[in-house]
Image (cartoon, rainbow, N blue to C red; front, side, top):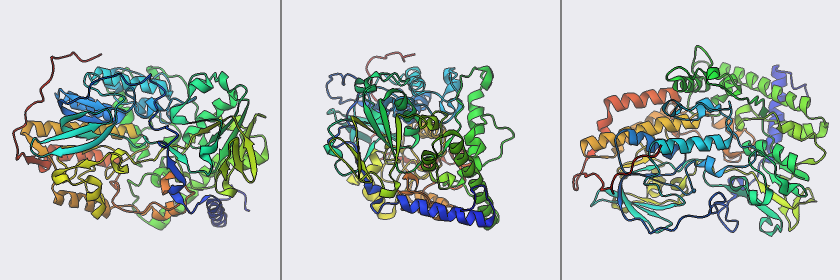
Amino acid sequence: MTTPQDLSPHGLAELRQRYRLERERRVRPDGAAQYRDADAEFGYYAADPYTTGPDEREPVRDTVDVAVIGGGFGGILAGAHTRRQGVERIRIVERGGDFGGTWYWNRYPGVHCDIESHVYLPMLDETGYVPEWKYAPGDEIRRHAVRIARKSGLYADALLSTGVTSLTWDEASGTWIVATDRGDAFRATYVINATGTLTDPKLPGIPGIEDFKGHTFHTSRWDYGYTGGTPEGGMTGLADKRVGIVGTGATGIQVIPMLAEDAAHLYVFQRTPSTVDVRANRRTTAQDVGADDEGWARRRRENYLRIVSGEHAERDLVADRWTESAGLLEKLLPSFRREGDREAFEAAYEAADAAKMNELRARVDRTVTDPETARKLKPWYRYACKRPTFSDLYYPAFNRDDVTLIDTADTHGIERVTEHGVTVGGVTYELDCLIFATGFNVGTSGVLSGKLPVHGRDGVQLLERWARRGPRTLHGFTTSGFPNLIQMGSLQNASSVNFTHILDEQAVHAAALIAAAEAGDALIEPSPEAEDAWIAVLAEGAPDHEWFHAECTPGYYNREGRGRPNGPSAYPHGAVAFHELLGRWRDESMGEVLRARTGPSRARAARPPHRPHEH
């Protein structure tokens, strides 16, 4: 074929054909059904390896002002901003043994954030904290989550190691009944659902997966009791072990170099290689990021959001591979559109995309010494088809004699798991340990997956309501028939690669809704007409990205090759414009979502004697 550096029309046509062929090698007829939940006999979902077990306690039957479902950054920020509005009794219910969400569960070796920590970590201005690294390790991120929770007094009423099993609206009292897996049935005037988008680990539905007699676990439940070591490495328990790992996405990219250092032999089972760009992590100082100036973190975060959302900024304060490649994120985030000549834009976009992918494939050739291994590691798809990854350690790991790459594309994945190993292409690779870096059921929180049923006015189930005409919300937060229920997440609002910034803005909005309802002794509930108007806004400007994702290599962005249909799923003009819209709405139109109470007037939840907030 024409050299990969050929960006002529003929060269781009050949590149498109190569992408199609590589895609067909990986598409499976079962689509997303090729995965299974990890909460069956494996017990990954329920098990918590980071706590000795929940403390014994009596079921809770009291009343609080606000119940927040989820103790990750979304829930913590919702609690913190609501506290700043003067609300006293805030109860966060979290399945993990402490705050942190995905950063509580994911403690695998090498875990870091791939967004710069100075924009990823929220409330840096408010807490006075300056991250130690440009890309923070997981433990630093988890400790910051705990820092915000303590500073905001969120431990006082929290229920940890507890999962919510149902939410039921009680019209007579004007409260939600929150039931949990520990027998709790307490009441809350408001509920904020912040169960996140990366909460339920998934496993591949490989035939024979239950038959493996060796040790196995998911990366989000790392078994240091077996491997030894810490997130920094030193896994002496693997010194004599043959280890296999399934998955080469964002998690695999980080953990594979660590396993390569410590395992006797590592087998990497890859279906689709990720793009792996330069990481260049380093320690940072307050002076490096201008932390001596008041409001430094907010300015840096907003600057980053503008750039990765396709907006103009006078200066790039972060200057990393995300902002450098910001123009290519246009297809990754279905939340802004380009104006002007579409054909000209798409041609320029494709050329820029090809240039970037050529650069990334050339990096493989420069780093990996074995030509056949290098060939297998090259990504053949458009840049925005999969989440980009970043590492300076990943490719060098494949230059080791004790690391073997097993490409599974020709067999559309692993054929089967046996008692003693993994079979690909008729060859069984015997293993002592099999690790799944297969990610999560992305975007399906407890509510959206159906695992957390929500019954609103007249006993109507939320998902049943949405099944009729699709999800109906105002701004993605509230739904008619479900008063005082506020949803956080990516549904029908705007998103960004820096999702903690999105969650912080959503938490500000949720807290403002509650403050307005408290001031007016009202319920928070949009009218069906307001929902229809919002759906019309989303639909009118929805970008045409369906064709792009239909041509992508399979992954969670395009429902494993099934495509991602156009539709009113996100605000079409980007996160910056969406946040401005919400600010104007709060100033001018908040009353539209407030309804007079038909039952008893709102009274503050009774509370035990005051306990000072933890600091």
